[in-house]
Picture 1 (cartoon, one colour):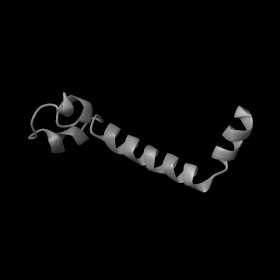
Picture 2 (cartoon, rainbow, N blue to C red; picture 1 turned 60 degrees about the vertical axis):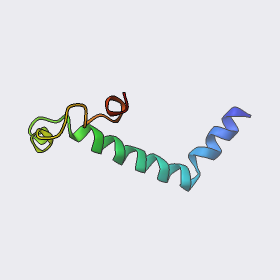
Picture 3 (cartoon, one colour; picture 1 turned 90 degrees about the vertical axis):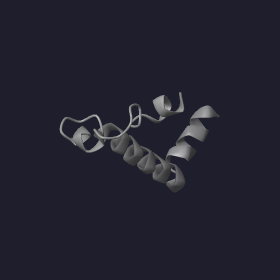
Length: 56
């Protein structure tokens, strides 16, 4: 039953779209930690890059 539900979820286009949006959001979040790119956020307050640290 679990295998059936897993296969059904993986074939669903909405699940694939959610995975694509998640990967885009992940790439956007990781881009601030790449060398050279973080210069554009150097003038921002501390912990601005990370949503978790901003919440804390």
